[in-house]
Image (cartoon, rainbow, N blue to C red; front, side):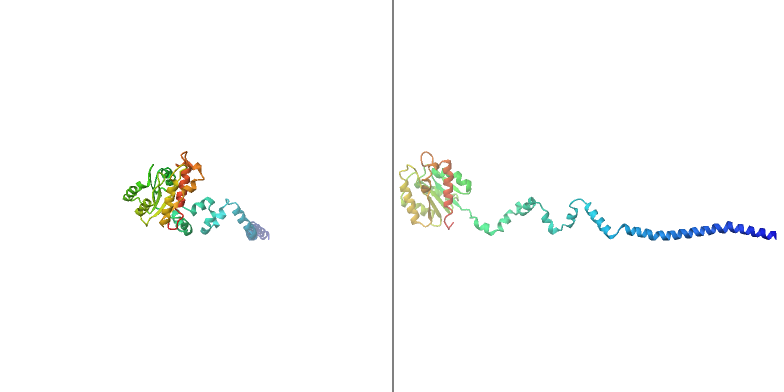
Length: 276
């Protein structure tokens, strides 16, 4: 009997030693699985809560705000908007480049029509024209001017022959002769015939405060203009009569102001007739 009891006690002790730890381990594992199962949804919820839609938008705005100034605008700028990003100086420089300046003029017919073509002009005269030559050539450097102190009309034939031989006698001729002596209508007409009806001729009237033949010379010039359609008058005598400051002390030759005035009057007279 005692043996059975002892055997039962030993069996119970073994069970307690073996089974109880196993049961404890099984319970702890089950608890861990349950805890892991319970923690997983919690972790998923936390991850989802970290980036809600409204916070994602806020984060995007904060990220854009943290970029350097102008980055967003530069990214949006399209090629067709590139001109808007130019500075005023760049825009002006782009409008007109030196190599395109001539093309720009050619594309503006209104401006081209306003520009008068340069005249091909030869001038023949005495010391008055000689004094004004620098002022005339400063404006029209391609003009041919043959002027000499003391020149009279009777000497002009050989001057014209020399200019023609050199190819310098042009289609428009300005005569400034008569200051050093009066001449007849016949001699003047011979000179006009020498130049030919195909040329346009301008004759400048003479002036001298004490010039005894002034009126005679100017009367001849006016008569020649009246009887020849291609002869026109530039009336220096009338223009200078009210401007003593245009003349030197002798009342004939030009002062500094007179040289510029003479050039303006002569060049202005060349533009007043439609055939030019």
